[in-house]
Amino acid sequence: MAVVALITACQTVGTNNAEIVASQKEALLSQSGFKVITVTTPKQQQAINGLAQYRVSAVKYNGKLYYVFPTATKDKIYVGKQKQFNAYKQALGGAADESASKSAGSAGSTANQPAAHDDIRRRGPPSRRS
View 1 (cartoon, rainbow, N blue to C red):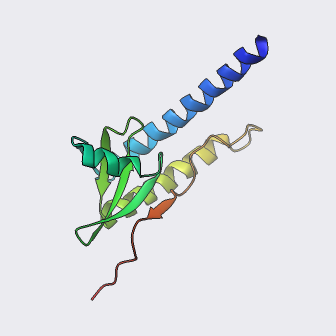
View 2 (cartoon, rainbow, N blue to C red):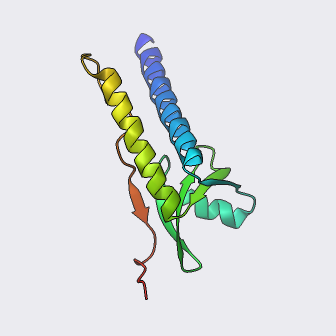
């Protein structure tokens, strides 16, 4: 019985950490100029369900490249173009540097700190510029 409680508690902590990291990413995305769009149609919901959770995905739409981050509940998405994504990467790198400097000198684990970069998943063939 105690083992089940311990496993449940560990899963809750893991979920809470993921939600905290996602919340931090959402704040950085917003500061970087990403727009928040509410998902309203079943077609939009289906498209969002195909995106990686807690990651920014590169998506081509009408021949243009966008960067999309779905919220944990997948009812909203953060959308930006290359300029906003570059600002986000720079802000994310700064946040990772700040976290590293706070933990410098401590023997604690850095496993739950945000990475210095976000994984990008490209959808569709790479675009060619004319």
